[in-house]
Image (cartoon, rainbow, N blue to C red):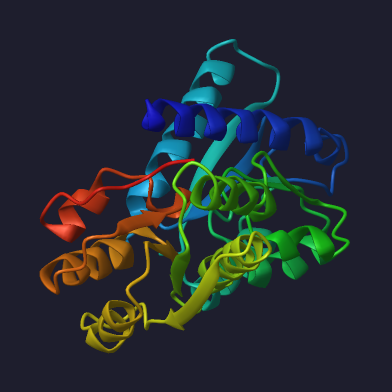
Length: 279
């Protein structure tokens, strides 16, 4: 079900980019191709450890393009993918090439918030419309970018739901938030920490290195604090490793994460099945 929803998000993003970029097809010096075709790009982590979140919307966009081209339109769409592996610095280089060499007329993505922060100024200067199917950082909408769009709610919506669940029906008195110190993960964890504090919940927090594999320092802090729930802000690969180490350390409270962990690969990463809560 989730993969189908992500494919739909990709198709919606594809449709939005096509509509936003339509004006780029009209002039001799706008867009890409030879007058019979244009190029629309897709950027995100396609081969990295969190690619399970990005491949479904890429497939949705590709399906939408194939269906559109099958109608024999006057101008067909070329679909070009850019594998950023979710890395902002890699996304920046790819975006420059997409604009200057490939002359894209629109971009679906970037998929993650950190790479969106880096790529946004490049697309804004080039006046290339973009639509992200999954970047949820609150600060992205505060940039006053005119050519940037997304088709999902931001982390303020998610954090409010989590806070309501934890302080309400779950009845948590203590919550420990962990993040990967990246734009998406830190923003989400901070928002949730603030939201549950406002409801009278005691909160402690810590950050982990997303390139590391040993989180014993954070695990020790959590077991000493004895929270009712641990909330991880970030993506499923790190969440899986953290949850596995928490379980091995004997932690028996609730372990939660957000939309960045809603992938079946979370179970693979954690090796053993852990309990997840959704709001």
